Image (spheres, rainbow, N blue to C red):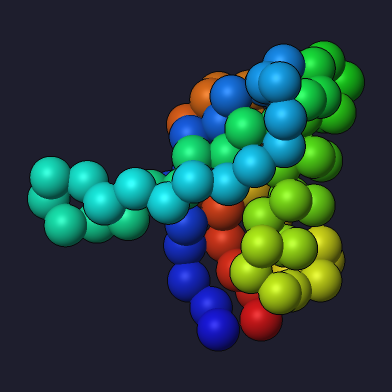
Length: 79
């Protein structure tokens, strides 16, 4: 499994969860809600951990390639 994921992140959420949405153009967007705060990379680390668990992959198989400081991220699956 390899490819790119479009992810919209909501930090400071009430619970950690992943929601998959189909966009009007037919593409898939992951909405990831994390309880972590968006400071010092805490929310990004929580997003990668939660997505990896949801996809059944190790954390090392995911990397943020765009949007490190944004709610909209592109995440690459390495394996």
